[in-house]
Length: 398
Image 1 (cartoon, rainbow, N blue to C red):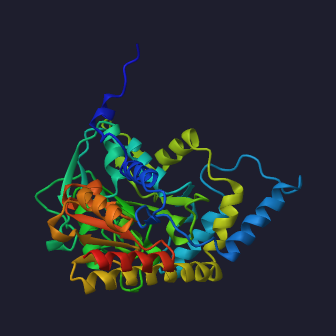
Image 2: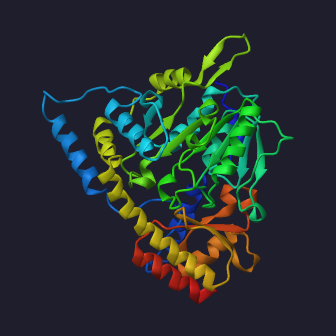
Image 3: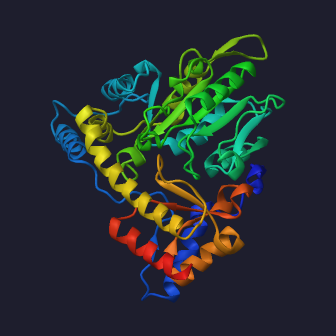
């Protein structure tokens, strides 16, 4: 009989969004006549932009001609897309070498897989509340986690404690689930802390395109010293509506070199390249051609039209919560609105209440950690009509 990875026993019985889907399915079966409005999972509703569709069609046509057909592609991603991403960063004032960019099928995969590069006895620092993939992927590998508290007092933006050592640090800004955004000075403090501890900062910038204030950093590499300590993950899921198309990227600077226990220097860039070449087939040529269109000035302008649409939804939700005097975070530089459950309810209790009395689906904060137990997340990714209807229902029950 094989020995199993018993670390899986340390995971919750089901992934957060699987449990939500199960509860909604049961309710829907019992009440087939009731219209359910889903503002829970962060899935987009706007279609892909015209330039992206044009890029996809061009690639499909290329695959139909033996002269332009593409077979296996580079696991690191095609040069045309890596160069386009580098150009996008440059327009935002950040220099990134295209060779440091690895194309993937989304940030979720890479944030989960990156832990393979690190030994199991590292001190891993993760904020609470947090995107569950950071936690679960480390628990699957038997790694121990030290949590830092995000709460209303610190605006759900925990800062480093110089009395606590860390080897790996996970940060997400704009944050999922809270929508909070770190300032440049706050991120500088985190980079300085990582450098002092010879730690690696794992920075998730999946929601950077929602930042409206030019003073707020879109990339960790806008911070002095970050290239010596940080890996950045990003996704086109929310920026360009690629939740179904699947494309993202990870930036691993060549400066990230550390000394192994045997005294040999090891490059995280080389290790990630080796890992991807061994375990990842690469994103498809067709998808990468569509993604290339996102990063041109015109392509990004089209994406921003969709982002503005979602930001209007966020304002609709925020206005309703303000009217009801319910404290909340996010909703400005983020598609997520994180609010305190009314009437001192716990978040799963509130989930059931909202589903039963208003047929609205959100995400219980407890699914993101202990500090989310009395909080709830709504997303702005619905249609204008459904978002407004959901808030009209919300107002009637509170």
